[in-house]
Image (tube, rainbow, N blue to C red; front, top):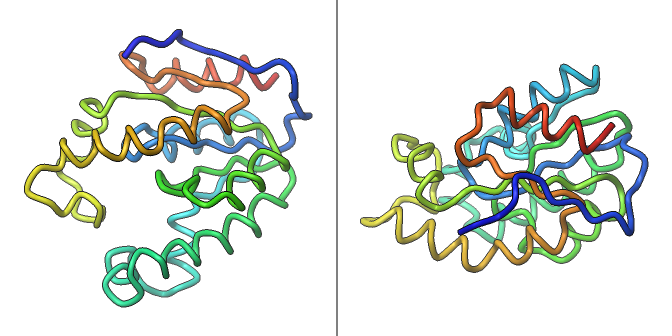
Length: 182
């Protein structure tokens, strides 16, 4: 996979009152989002953390009791709520763009930044996690590759900016995102 460090769509840039980070699990959306919000003096929210807070259950528990469809319905509601806040940075779940309504809310309500990394880097960041139900499989790397093939076109199509996180420190990624927002 070869992508430039930062790509931006210049045709439809909205005022940067809201920054929405999208991309695969393990791309660093939460870590980058926290630091980005701190630099901008904006509020930070992670959609998965908000889903857990509202449900009073962990994501694996939600998947076990409600299935992926139940989780996605909760995610849709949270994205609708959170994308209406001003001066916020929102880190979305890796599968949040599977629903058209989520893609529309993100694209219409703020600047969407796709943090892009390879499935191999995702695997390095997620291989020890016990909180990722979609990776509860004998071959998590194969699963990450399959998810990438399915979701990467959605991330790319929804994004105003694409920022590669391959071989960059968190601070360097935050600086790249700040540069496209300001």
